[in-house]
Image 1 (cartoon, rainbow, N blue to C red):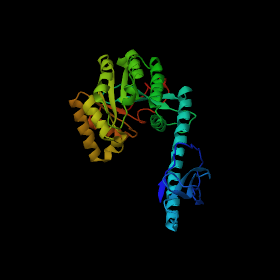
Image 2 (image 1 turned 60 degrees about the vertical axis):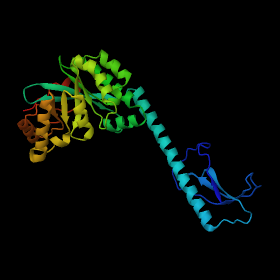
Image 3 (image 1 turned 30 degrees about the vertical axis):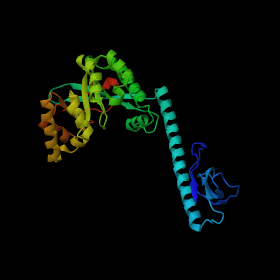
Image 4 (image 1 turned 90 degrees about the horizontal axis):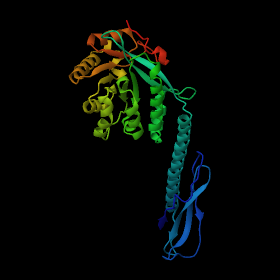
Length: 335
């Protein structure tokens, strides 16, 4: 017996979830050009009961009779293919719905920016203010799921550029001379639209935080994009250092001005000698490349004391100030 697979692109079906079934239908007909004759067919049935297509079984000899095992194998194969096709439809529908939702968010500019200070503890002052995206009235309101979803459907750069524009628009409302930090993935930094924005931005008042947690394919191109703005005073920060291999690679290649320790290293640092040892090593390394270390996620006075004892110059977290309106971002202080 020979199996003939269907053309799965010929019958697009949008089917809801549910059980998938396949059953045998006896077939008859004239012999084919190759001498075979149709013997039976098994429908490829989707979860809503729609027959997507059919697997046919042909016999090459008139006396050939399908066995129970032949039928069972065909049924199992048809069910497997049906499930595969169904999952493909569902992924396509999910992607289309997600893209439509994100398109609505981007076109409607349904994104708001909050601002959180990073405070110097080696001397009085605010080191910088970080712009943080939020999605008010949407679920979830926090940014990570939205940006991750946007990159999955090829809208990540558009969403990041919208956030950048919103953040930059707030710069006149910050105290004179205050520095604004904005998160950006390497992929978006390489876009011509982002290059144009950097060319026209007040570089001396900006920090670009590299947020990508995966290896960058072309560090040379990324460095080339950042170089003109860095020559005009732009600072580069690597976010979440210590959270994975990629952030360490960014540090080695990009030589950032700021290295932001992941909050997993700051949390409970006063109780953990290993965390303190790693932070001390990062402090030494940062000094050797002319960078400053920033400890993220600082929420308790004990953590602050431990970080100060290690000589870390800048801290950021709820202890120093919650994300809030731009006007309040430069009023933070720590004891």
